[in-house]
Each structure stands twice: as C-alpha cells, then as structure tokens.
View (cartoon, rainbow, N blue to C red):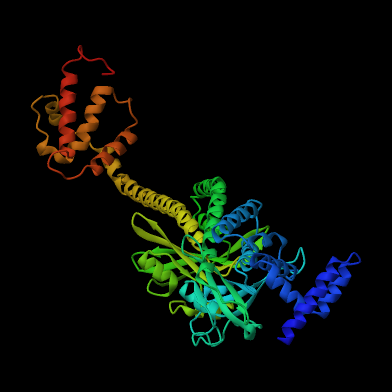
Length: 548
C-alpha cells in the first residue's frame, strides 16, 4: 500500500509538472527516467494495447539490421498471400533484365526472412554431382562474385538442410537442440543460439531441386508456426521456371537456326565421314557446354563399339581439336557407352566414380578426371547406330534435364546424318564392287586372238553356201560353221567392204562367247533368227531398201 501511495503521489506530481507552463521535453524525459514506475502506470491506464503494439513494431524496425534490403520492410505487416504475389512481381522484373537466379533467390530469401520475422536464414544450393550442399554467400562488394561454400553431403541424420534436401519436403522444427534427428543441428556457427527452424525445399515444376532455404529463430523468441509455410518459395521458384521457359521460347528461333546450320554442315560433308563425325562432336560440345566429347559407332555384327577420332582437349582458332588415331574397339557389354548402346536409354551420371559401370582405367591411362557424364544413343530405324558421350559440364555441377532435352533433339539430326552417310558409303562400296566385277566380266567376255583369227581363215564349203540361200535350211548339223555362216551372210547382204573383217570376226566371236547355255535364247537361236532375216532380205530386193 505504501508503494501504491508513493506511486500515486508521483503520478500527481507528474501531472502537475505536465500542466506547468515551464514544462519541456527534456524535463519530461528526465523525470520519467528517474521515475519509470510513473510511465508504467500511465501506459497501463491510458494507452491502448494497439498503440503499444505499434510502438513495439516501430522499435523493431529501427533496430533492424542495416544489411536488410530496404525494399523488404514493406512485407513485414503484409498477409502471406499478398506478399507472395508481390514477390512474384519482383521476380518477374528482375528476370526480365537478366537477373542471376541464385542471387535472385537470395534476395527472395531475405524478403521471406523479414516476412516470417526470422532472426536469420541460410540459402543452400546443390554442389557437384548433386550429392552435397553448398551455402550461398552474396558478394560483399557491388561488382563482386557470390560464393558457394561446401557444408556437407546430402543425407539423413546430420543437419536440417541435408534432411530436407534428401526428403524434398518442408520441415518445421520447434526445438532443434532437442531433436535427435539432427545431431549437427543447422551446422551454422550461430547454431547454439538457434531454437526453432523452418526449412523449405526450392523445387521447380519439373521436380528438380534448386536449393534449400533455412529460416531460424533464436532462443527467447516465439517458434515458427504452420502459417509461415505459406511463404514456401516453391511458388516463386515456379514463377522463375516459367519466366525461364518464356525466355527459352524466345531463344527457340536461335536454336532452330543452329540446327539448320548443323544439317547443312552434315550434308555438305557427307562424303567425308571423318569430317561429319568431327562436326557432330563440335556441335554436341557447344550445345551442352561440355569439356570433352566422344562418339562411338556400333558394329552390330561383332557387338562392338569403335572409334578412331578423339577429343584431346585442345583448341585451334577457337575450335576443338580432334585427333585421328588407331581405331579402338571394345565390347558392347562394357562401360557406360556400352550400356547406352545395349538399352538405347539416356544416362545422366552426376558422379562417374560413384557409378560401378564407369571404367576408371581410362582416367588412369589418360590422366584426365571424369566428374560427370551425359551419354546419348543415336537411333536410326529402331536400332542404335552410335553413342555420343559428353564428359564434365563446364558451367554447373552436372548435366541438367535441359541438357538432356536439347541433346535428344540434337541426336535426331545426328542419326539422320549418320544414316545418310552410312547409306552413301555403302552405295559407293557397291559401286566399286560393281566396277571391278564388270571389269572382270569384260575381260573374260572378249574372245581370244586365236578364236577371231581362226574365223578369219575359215572357208565355207560350196554346197553349204548354196544351202544357206534356202528358206528351209537347217543349221543344226553345221555347229562348227555357225560363226562363219553369220560372217558370210553379212558379206552377202552388205558387201565385203562394209565392215572391217577383223572387227567383224572379233564381234561375232565375242557375241558367241557371251551367250548363255539356256534352252531358247542361245547361240543357235541367234544364228537361226539371223538366217531367217537373211533369207527374207535376199529374196525381196525390191521390197526393202538397203538401209532396211
């Protein structure tokens, strides 16, 4: 009671002082600092709870860290749905001017941190081979570059962020120190002060994990609740995805022009198979931004893959250099390329050394380190005719789904070009065989000198010459004289000087040699028909002209 009467008297003195004409701001502040109980009584009796809440929010805004972007403070008092709408608008503006996706997500995370009244946050992206996490550190200066600091593998039983990266599900932990699932807590340096954690996976529409957003509140503050999950950055990541798709559609014309150039190059160089294969490898490397490339053709008869053109990792005048060496062959049952050739399926391997199908002997032999592989079949008419293997993504930790999709479309052009090239070379090979065969045939189908000389010296008996003039003459008994009978009929019809005798004899004996021994269209039939025409012409001089 004594304290109460003392407070009342203080309050009366404060009121009297307040009504005094000599009252100043400094006097009021000095008095209240000496008598804080007066302020407590005044606030509790005269000030509404809404006003006190406004004072607290104002004080919180003043004490906010200077590193917090100015444009994020407007989200503190917004409802979650309205805030998400504004976030997407902000993302769209930044993406339209070509914003960096990782830096943009960091800015988004900073806004979400303020909106959820979190004490801090950490943004993680997948590391090499997509099996580890790296914490994103923004640039410290305006033109600086952001950094990705490795923090650990993606697995259960370690940290909250690793758990969410593995499960890809939002996780709310009210007491991180008391949760046995996370022996390493958040893994952050400030982990001992952290009590509540809200961890959100950032996933695209296609289901690809982009990153992990980890929000936390320290001891002494209220823990996160379910409503905070409404700001899950999935909606914003989808917005980023759709904007990137729109940007990709705008580049589709460029890609079409690129593929037309590829086709033109292929068919201009279809005669030179090595040049064709080299162009395929160059375009494939540029398409997916790979460090090395290999192209193997399939030998279906021997179930082998073979190649004699290799990417040595050097450049000349801005173009990759490919070295032609002794052909290497290996079984289709071995290696990643063999697996693709057998199954016809695309293989995207983020960690080559973790895959038992990878042959490490190649790296040991060459001294090259293979991190990741994208292997694509080249299919023609339902069968695999080749395999293109991309090694080590230059920009990024591994080959993406976008690389796979672009490569699949590119593989169609590869298949068309290789099929046409193989068809062309088979035709050329057949032509060569045909020419050799015809040369052999022409050599063996020409009569010998002895044959045509004997014909030149052959003389028909007088009786046979008279019988030839008859319609019913039968040539069967005179087989040895058939060539001479033909020469005799030519001379009788056209004259002795119409044809050179040697050429006529060569022609006659060559025709005889090329006739096949068949039942009807044979050498005897030819002489019989010739005699029939001879008899008609000889007995009808006034009907047919010399030319006829």
